[in-house]
Image (cartoon, rainbow, N blue to C red):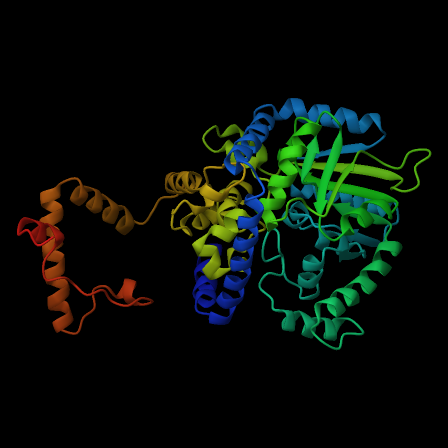
Length: 461
């Protein structure tokens, strides 16, 4: 089954799953309340968004300059930079590093880019044990699932489902008390932290002038992944760079508020390299893998390059009425929701063009984006590109041309509307539903006896 057909199948199933929708609605309602409180801490939330957008746009417009500056700072401290053109090159570099160093145990901090390049399966093929250490990521790993959401990977699960999972996979779980569940995971993860030879993390930002990797976590697992193992590997997209260290003063609190409603993430960490003489902790080796994987092509698209501003806060997913109904796994991509529907066709090709049609174009995603990406405009641009790249069925082309011809004249619109209502009434009397494609999942609308135009002429409105 091709991705578009599978998406329709999954969407139909998930939108009909009332328990799934109840769980997501509960989580989204709590998120909305937290973000509303978080925004109230800002003197001017829109001004903060404008500033973040300007910072990221400057970085995108001068990406080559800032990336080279970041690289030079890292290399000065003895770090290694690897430029990966695609996912395969990134996987090969990390796999070779693990093989050369005899790595058998790996701990991972939360990273969507490692999901994008399918790093864990590649390392497992080498015989490495790979453990996700973010609690949400650890939960979905135990379930052998991909993350459900960019920020909250296990959003689709209830406490009871997680307790059942832990009782099956872990020891010492007797109830669904959150404290007990977290303690059970912590006991298991602590052993993994101290046994691992390699720690892998993502990056929220790459600070060019300081040569620092900025990482935000809420559980402290990021610091344990990056300080205890002998090797630390950062896997990040090239678009994560920002010009100046001072930019984090705006970006960090805006990211925390847009992502979870917090004033600032619990652990905000800056890492500039391996452990140096006189330092008490940190890795012996420090590697940064800078991933392109389609980002340069998007950068070259002047119309859509601002999509690279994304700071992966997940706000657009939470606002999207489509995501709220069908959930994250339905998209079958690393990045779900509106931002995923914009990015994925650029990263993975035209077989994912259908995602750009999974939108009501209501503009909610654009209105909540903390870096002011014009998301619903880009969804339309992707649709336009999809039509140009793929010869559409003759029936579809005829339907749109007929619609354009009808809508270009008010008299034609009125006459054909009258004819359409007449045909529907006659068909219904004969037991035929001409609206069946629409009414398959919806209630049939009642046809008015008069059109609005007729009522207007008679002064009935």
